Image 1 (tube, helix red, strand yellow):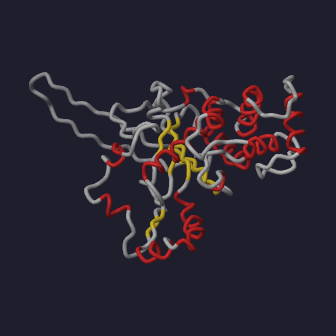
Image 2: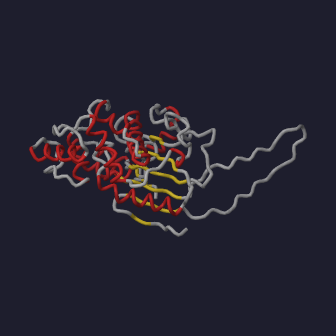
Length: 307
């Protein structure tokens, strides 16, 4: 394809090699039955946003992700009409149900960026899971990206930060009270999304075209069930020590990512699409495991990587 494999600073984008035509053998039927051939969708290209574009254990998309989102735009231009599906992935540390929620939230916020839909983002300021509420730090990062001097993005209030909020409010004809409330966020979030992703998509650009209100087929949270790296037993034992958690989390960053797969033009979501909605639990994910799935995903004698 014209768009080749390109390594990014915090992600990866590539066209997949062409596949040979698959031979399908048919046999005659005798009682009015039908041979049914279903073409399963196989991705033509993929894109990956690495963990470095999120804060640890957060789904807020940092301004630096603009570079990788530009690569997704280029990949889509090289594959016109190819519908997308997004997959969030977490690392194998912690509770798998929580990890499914986190990976799903990360896929959801990327989906919202691509659609230029501020509602899913605003809920993280008002109705986020316990301890995951966005606040002044996220506001500061958005304003800084848009050219307003907040004096830093630590999340600490300051006169400079308040003045930046007032300046933004004035630029939008809002009451300049220095507090980033609902009306301010209603203007700020779309502007930040446009900074990250200039050309908005529609739901028809996704595999299931928004047909499911829960996003089935368009966005998935895959929890910790698709690691690209698994520690050996000895490594895992060492890294479980509290003093080693920082090293463990750093090495596990390769497992935390959001993927976009681009399917052939005209593809639609198969009726037997196996992935549950981001709001659903892990049981449907586990239902896809091989009989030795628990062994496969846990540490063994040697470390393992998927290239």
